[in-house]
Amino acid sequence: MSVQLLAQAIQQQCAVEFEYDGHRRVVHPAAVGLHRSTNRESLRGYQVGGTSASRTTPLWDLFTVAKIQGLRVLGGPVPVPPGFSPGDKHMSVIYAER
Image (cartoon, rainbow, N blue to C red; front, side, top):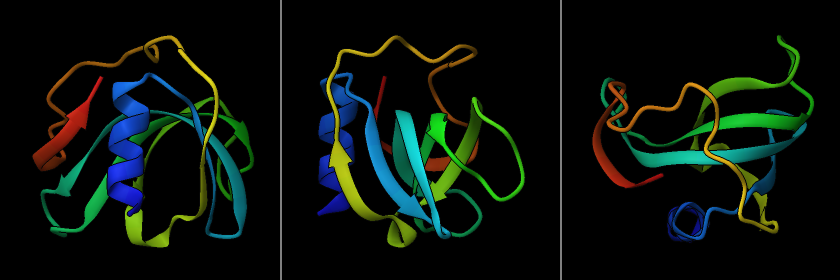
């Protein structure tokens, strides 16, 4: 369910909000697909709000979809995140991208 909702948010250019590793995150999703080395479904996104254990926002990150909890699609459209380029090199298969 989360992958489909993330793909929809990407297509509609919406932000998303979720809990990840105990932190609330607000993210502009850029791509969702299979991570090249782990073969896990992953989200590439630009975190613009919430918190992180190791860095301050805004920041680019790669999130394992199975660890995303309480996913909500927020309003849009949101701008294309800075520094985004199609064809994420960390993904072997991309289901949806900006």
